[in-house]
Length: 152
Image (cartoon, rainbow, N blue to C red; front, side, top):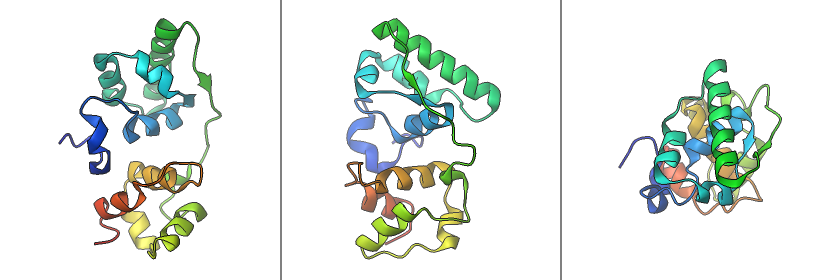
């Protein structure tokens, strides 16, 4: 399987029918709220471009945002909503485990240490943050914890 995707996403990443975590990470990085209905308007090549395009430096973030908005406008006639950018996103902080992640882990009988949290990549931290939110369908929290070697 492609290393750009997490194993817990294996059931849908081959055809990219859902927005993969790596794209969701980029959406939060560039401040765009992309709906699944928008995503469903894109063809496979457009979805793959959103997976592959870099979105880390200031220039890349601007380019990604503009490319994405052009796609959404082309497919739907209206731009996607923009979100405020977090100045210090929780997934970039290896020293502080967010409360939602700690509570979700505790609910599952798991203890996450700061050392474990520090050793995760920002996109892994992002995934756990998203998967631990009460509003999120979070059946992939445990598979993600296993994949990230936080539990055996």
